[in-house]
Image (cartoon, rainbow, N blue to C red; front, side):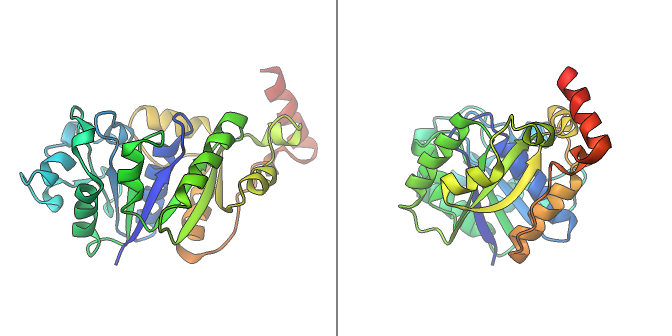
Length: 262
């Protein structure tokens, strides 16, 4: 039976889809079967992030309206054989799709996978309810910025009304040099404010941004952060990636000073 996990953030632009895709890729590389559902109907971009947009034949609307089975609409990732995507529709009136429609699709896949990731639309409107109502767990993606933290707090408040077994935080785009210089909100402060267990920390990494822009996953210098995130999710461990490690000591101080001048 698959673990059904929704990825949400409250606001756009925090890297939610990238976190969802890279975590799915890491888990699949560890031998788990993972499927990611894009339920951001009409505004979807998961297929682009994962570089499969030219291979999409059917989408989630085709499944809901009975033109194909869910298994027929799945697109296997180009590089990770255990990773699949169920694409969303590029143009469709999202209000015509109900939470029960999405749940039907999720339920049809749960015996074939270890993990079902649900990429939630930004905001807390109808699309949010459709995504969250068919999940058992939630990952809230937040960045070390006041606006993102406030939105995450609102999302956590709304999530409390759903029947979720667990809620986790992923703090994304953390810059170790700025943490060391006291120029960025500390991860511990974010955890304390949001009162939610931390699942992992992902550093700001130009490799991740570049790979996502061309529809590719993995291969970044921050691979260890993704592995720790995957292990924490699967095993319940609490090993958090240290974004400040390479900015400590003499050479670390030199790196921080160089970054400041750039």
